[in-house]
Image (tube, rainbow, N blue to C red; front, side, top):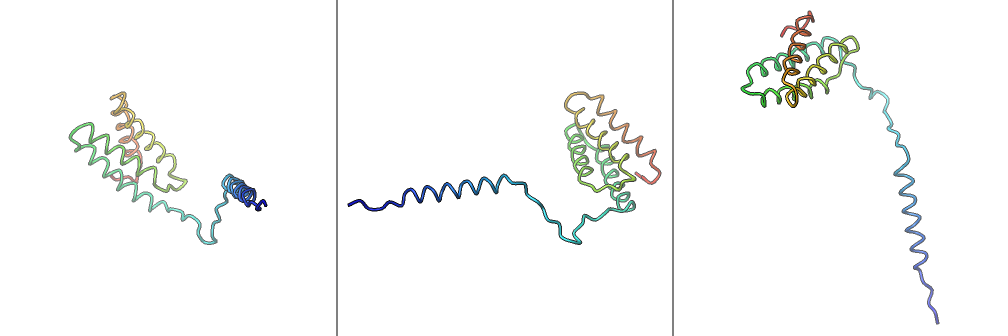
Amino acid sequence: MKRPSFFPLIILALTLILVTGFVFSSSPKQTERKIGSEVPVVSEEQYQSALTVVLKKFVTSYDTASDDTARAHVVDQTLATLLSMRVPSSEKDLHLALAIALQKMKQGFVSNPQDVSDGYAQIKTEISQTSWLHV
C-alpha cells in the first residue's frame, strides 16, 4: 500500500513563497510622507551664520596645519560639511563655487599641487567678494 506524499505540496508552497518574495522585493517602493513632515527650509540668516562658522574654522585650521596630510584632512572634513548643509536658493551659486574649490583642492593633494593653491585662492576670493562673510 502506497502512502500519500506531501512532498509535491511542500515544493509547490515553497515555490509560491519564493515567487511572491521576488515580486514584492522588485516592485518599486513608495515612501509615504506624513502631512506636516516636510523638510524645513533653511533661512538665509541661518545659512549665512553656519557657513561663516564653517569657513572660519576651515581657514584657521588650514593655515595652522603642519603638513599636507593635515591640510588634506581639513579640506575633506570641510567639503563633507558643505555637502551636508541645506542651502537657500539665493546662495546656491556661492555654495557650489566653494564646494568645487574644495574638491579641486582635494584632488590636488593627490595629483597636482598647483590645484591646491588655486582652489585655496578661489575660496579666499569668494570670501572677500561676499559682503556678509566675515572670516
